[in-house]
Length: 194
Image 1 (tube, rainbow, N blue to C red):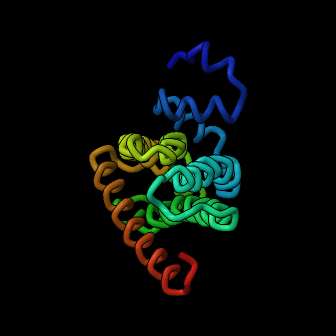
Image 2: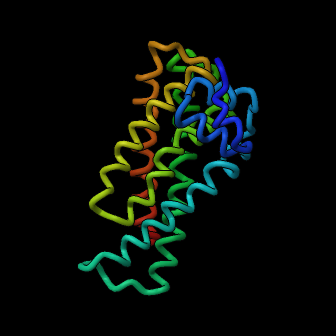
């Protein structure tokens, strides 16, 4: 595969994220070559990008003409909770990928599961500023589907999942992560965090 000269001019981490988005085969190959540790995937990709939805969500609430009055305290709390739940969502997705590995005849590997979850989440994080405008929120759903496609590429490249199993693996991981997210949200609500 030839390298895109435009992408080659862009420095390190941003180059990798752009490759994942527009040239998934090449991007996942580069992630495999870098072989990031799970902390690097979490703190180098997820944590910085989680700031985007954490900013967009409170802005959307503040701009909502029929919503409750936005106070500095409510906006700060909304930022913190959105940030925490965005990071937690990726960790839960990685845990689902890790837990389901044997079902798809894949060796469990936490570092690679976290890399797949982190890098595959990039489209959703980049689309999340649209959460500030309710009429454009539907585009975040399109970004979610792009993330699912990227996850399939990552499962094949990093975890060596068979091509014919990748789509089902993505669907199963999304289902398990969704259930875990509902439980986490329910528990958070029960203890008064939400």
